[in-house]
Amino acid sequence: MGLAEELGLDKPIQTVGHESLLNIIYTGTMIARASFRYFQGTELTDAQFNVLVQLKYAAQRSLSQSVLGRRLVVNKADVTGIIDRLERAGLVVRLPHPKDRRVHMIAMTDKGEKMVDALEPGYLDGVERLMAGISGKELKDLNGVLETVRKNIAQMMFAGRRGQ
Image (cartoon, rainbow, N blue to C red; front, top):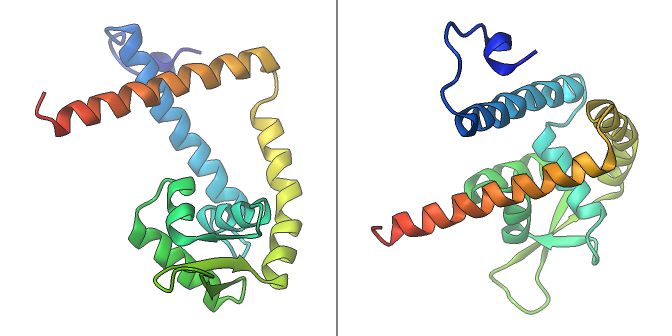
């Protein structure tokens, strides 16, 4: 079923570019809903889980808040709130940076590691089910297309800052 039909639009979408953009947005919304549903009933939100996963796979098992913010693509205030809630739950700790007193390193506690280890298999199973029926080549092609879209967005934003 095409997007216009799925959304119940009265008229077709005018350009394939616009339809593609709407597909990305609509699909992202559906993924967010599925993610919310998966984490409902757990002690974590998807953003908190993503912090724990980033820490689990970090080379040093800790990351600064600014690096976490970049990796999670959220603003500084959101990262601080996410870390605050994880810290209150005993899932992460803030540690002093070894060389910069202004920076806190975030590390996962044993409790946090147990939590992510318990949730990660179900999460990865959900990812597999979400991508079922799509070949590895198609997924790589999709990744390439989305990378190009992000590059175009970055160029548009940079040009906008320069007044162009």
